[in-house]
Image (tube, rainbow, N blue to C red):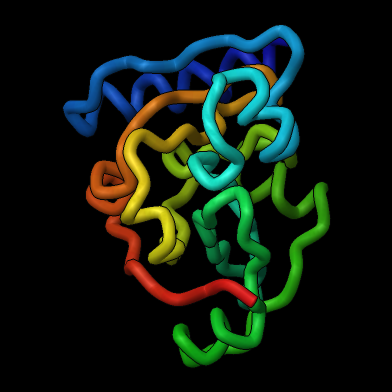
Length: 157
């Protein structure tokens, strides 16, 4: 539990540092999947900003996608001009500081390269993981783009 609390506090600090209101909430039933998160917070699955961690060599590539979209890895590779592949759970934890199911778009151990699903831009609010499988925060897609310096792109299959 202590590791989870540290992750949540890292996200909280990143929100505050970015001038964003602390909108982190805890959901005891969990927010591990986009469908779980939507049920917990009371929004559509599309409004869940899910964090997909990909690997480009030793570099973290974070794709923040609408909960209803699947990420097209070939599109991401083409957009970045480098090959990317799926990342295993241990690598995700070691490089981001988050466990799968709680990967936040902010508060990473080192800044990742970020792409944001263009489909999120039409949705407000959106909810993103806040460092644990039971925590999420409310924001807007525009604020996510600003906080992450993410490029808005067509990333869906």
